[in-house]
Length: 161
Image 1 (tube, rainbow, N blue to C red):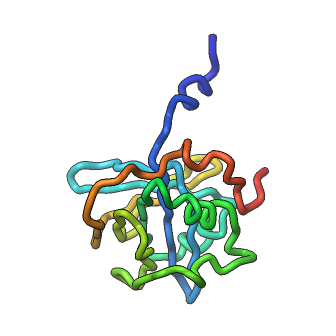
Image 2: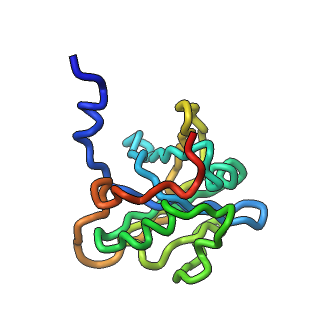
């Protein structure tokens, strides 16, 4: 009998960048575990690694911003997935705008929303942040989104146990 990896290895989810602002700090990371989790009301959950600086900032944030990227934005994904905010300012050279509640919105995202943080769900080594969308936007056109297979080879910027 095959292990659960035979199932998981077939998945190719959209990747997103999650940003958080709290107590004068901002952070962001590449996230592969995220999904709509309710239809009425619309809710979305993003799962952040307990090892990640973004998780530490997000615990105190009232709002998180979730960004979808075009497939050709792998360099942006590598910045948020392959570097840690403990040693680098990931935002210093990016085009940003302020979103609802002071959230950081990446101007080069294909689509994005800002969500009010609700529940935190213990998922083991990741914590789920259930978000109620309060603001959103998209760019015109349809392009393929960045997926997990596009991000293979990006080594995590934070330590891995």
